[in-house]
Length: 174
Image (tube, rainbow, N blue to C red; front, side, top):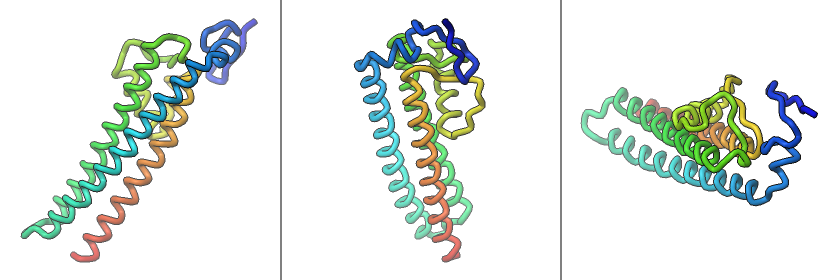
C-alpha cells in the first residue's frame, strides 16, 4: 500500500521516514529535537551578540568626527545581512548532519544528500520563509525545518526592528 504525501511523493508504510516507521524511534526524534534546540540557541545568542556589537559600533561611528550617515547605514545593513547568512549556514549544517546520520532522521527530497551547499540552499529558503517548493523535507527533519522557519521569521523581524530603531536615532539627530 502506498501513501500519497502532500508533496506529491509516494511513501510506503514501511519506508524509514513514513509515519509508521520513524516516529516510533524516540531516540531519532529526540536527536532531531536536541539538534534543533542547539541550532536555535546558537542563532539567537549569535544574533543578540552581533546586534549588541553593531549598536555599540554604530554609536561610535555617530560620535566620530565626520561620521557620515551613509557609512552608518551600510555598516548596519551589511552587519545584519552577514549574521543572517551565518545563521542560515548553522541550520544548513544541521540539516546536512541529520542527512549524514541516516534515513531514519528524515529526507530532504530534491537535493543531493551529500551536498552541504544544497542543504544551505534549503536552509536559506526555509529561514526566509520563501518556500519555493523545489526541496521538500519528510520525516523527523521536518521539525527542524518548521522551527527554522519560525526562528528565521523572528530573527529577520528582530533585525528589521533594530534597523528601524538605529536609523530613527540617526535621522532624528541629523
